[in-house]
Amino acid sequence: MSRLRELPSGGVWTAAEQVWFAGVRLRATMTVLRLADGGLWVHSANEPTPELCAELDRLGHVRWIVVPNRYHHLHASAMKARYRDAQVIGPRSAQSRNEALVLDVASDDERLPALVPEVAPVALRGVPFLDETLFFHTATGSLIGADVMMCGCAADHFTWRWASRLFGQFGRYKAPPDVRKNTRGGPEVRQALDEVAKLPVKRILVAHSDPVEDEPLERLREAWSFVRA
Ligand SMILES: [Fe+2]
Image 1: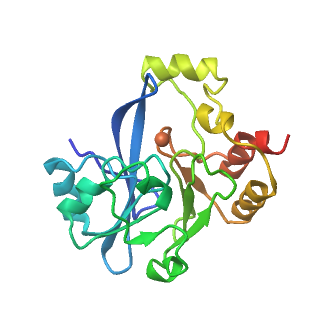
Image 2: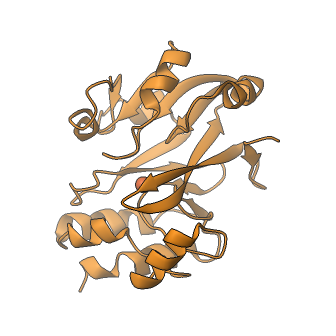
């Protein structure tokens, strides 16, 4: 069975694996874009199994491996080992958590928008605990993130269904519990969210939940209302 599924917008594929994190079993979704030059941009890589790599190889050649924040670096090095001429984009803070991770381009590198013009980086500043950069894919109006928000739903493993109810985020998007606990509001994060709110976003893709298609910017605003309190 194919792991990669193309979204109706076309040119965007996702695949999910299961991970244990802090005692709950979560979906971890990888997003793949095919760029104008035929190269692939792989965000929050899943484990590069032979089956997954065969599917990627049918789509194009992996040129970019994106580590979106401090935490989603798990398979980036293995993906790089498989696709040696790919360049790894990510925050320096992820390197301090993973010595094997070698970055070719830092997420805040001024060259990045020109290197991959189809995908605009928007740093979620003021949230050093997460240190996430969001990416806006202009062609499809897709805002691609990882841990920027999440919710539990009926399709999830019972551990996260249970925990998400406890945290008040079953069927309701919020920032992850540990991010809320470790983030204080301030002008930086509010400005970053205001910047995102100006984008013509049609959907938000996140790592641990379904794509957010219904009023995605409103869901994001609600998820981060705690920094405006
Ligand atoms: Fe995550």
